[in-house]
Image 1 (cartoon, rainbow, N blue to C red):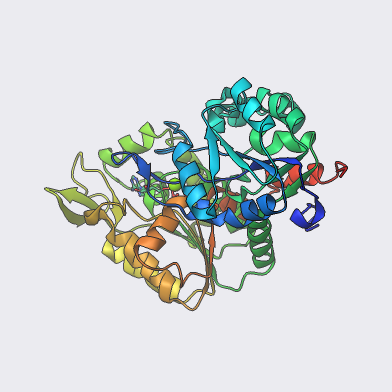
Image 2 (image 1 turned 45 degrees about the vertical axis):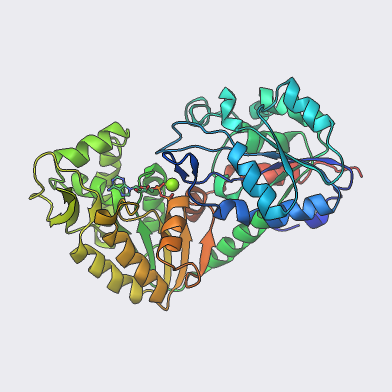
Length: 418
Ligand code: ADP
Ligand code: MG
């Protein structure tokens, strides 16, 4: 038991049907129809191996999105192949989530065998809309189709998806209401490392926030700044653009249109309030890069040509961020500084990640694409802690109890009869 939650040491899984929620959502290469990274798949292997070796009949639940913010759902079929290769043991796949075919496959499982169900977000109740608009309580989540259909077939629920611990959805918070529950080894490790670190970060503690999924970043910035966890925030990606827009700078119609398209225009008001309260601690980009005739060109805000789309921070900004990172004691990073996947717009991310690699500060990095960038620039060995969760890490840093942590504490109190 750690922090009021069962670990795998507290449950007996032999010959038991165990539902295990993992987060193996990875960046996908749409053109090649393949996964661009397998970090999260590799990270949950110890839990799966332990459960299988201890004789569990193991049922895996997972989701896969693509693009920005939950659009285009993918099957988890490719993940089963990668899981099998990593485990050196077959992970069966069924193209069903909780229908009769999935249930029959679960009933047929033998001890030690592993079955991956298809993308849980194919079930409408798992969608983010339910999370943000319907706000189902955990008790109500226990009444959703997924939980009603699968829980009766299972003895135990294990959550190893720390990366999704900020999500309030049936596959993550519903089963703990009805099944004895525990956290997996990866969840345990990530939760404990981050918890102890946050109790007393060495100062100065700098947050580097970028990327394209920025709602969570704005959610936590005020708390982290006002609450004093973060001494400074360095902004890049869409976070930097929204902050500058809020500050009355002209970031160009291209960038504004992109922010509107992603539904983030409302964050401009949040950014205004944030700047009013904590301006001194927020560092915004001074220059940006756009692509012209296939090449990189840098501009100061206000001078960005009509119609150009901002795709990276500029080199003046990146150099400034490098020196802040090099003189910090703790650095949390979530979200790349620009579209680092393309050569003309990777410089900002590359320079900042270089500094993460050689700073003496303790560095923590989270987020699928941020980790992909760390791999691309060969920094994974130099970073203090790579957290599979981006959003969960960010939400956790606000000091708020994560929904899945709360649910697991509940499920840890349900009696497990062996
Ligand atoms: P993480 O996965 O690390 O949490 P996000 O998913 O929030 O990060 O964002 C990563 C994506 O953001 C990358 O694919 C990158 O191309 C994109 N991105 C970064 N900066 C910009 C920008 N200025 N405009 C558009 N997309 C951007
Ligand atoms: Mg991402």
